[in-house]
Length: 341
Image (cartoon, rainbow, N blue to C red; front, side, top):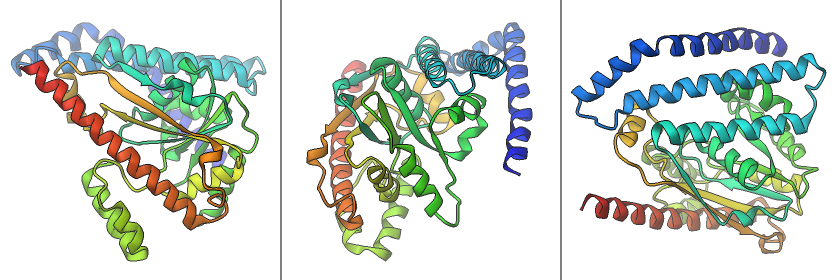
């Protein structure tokens, strides 16, 4: 049944991807003048619709190349060749980010890249946008020259490259609707059991993209179960309360790992089509991606086996991250005010 669903999904997504790439490219003489006129009529002189559709062309062809390469690896008996697939992932993430910069003006500044070395490392990252996994993949594969192992939601398998290459690499696509979480947590433990100095296990402990409504609802739910925890998270402004179960499972799987906390600013408001258009309608400061390392010795010794202790430690680190994000956003707003002035 699982195999049948996989084949059905790929028989739809892959031909659809290639057809979409061809149509977008062939129709450039039609849609490009049209969206330029629409942008001009809206007085959007950075032409956000044209930029976004230009990126869509780049994305479609980069995805197509990834699918074709993965098919070639399968035909030549190399579907289990991890170095080749990691190289393909590195190429894909780098080219996709360069395409975002060329078309939409997105760029990334990474702070403290040395925090990722030496391994083994687990990265607990902020989740604010669909682009989180792309930027973290670029940071880990291209800048740090390391190999990531991701925990991602299963819905992302709709992306053809993630569906094929992502499943050939040691990642786990989480079923968030599972009635029994035990198999999922055991899979997260197994995912990082054998990570080495060149490997980073990556999870987004918030579980979903943050916004004010989700934050309020999450803290209200926590208050019904653990009022003390809700109190210590009450002042959170930007992040969502972390879900400790996944992070705990990965720490059990790799009990000697160091932990890197990753936050970023610049993706706020980019979780909707309208938000993306608004962002690229003006010149954006670079996305700021910050890494902070906590060596294994700095992790409370009993937190790996004591769930309450781990939750307190993770909450403390998440509140620190929230304050750092708040300061970074204020600096970003000040930069924009000065630019306008």
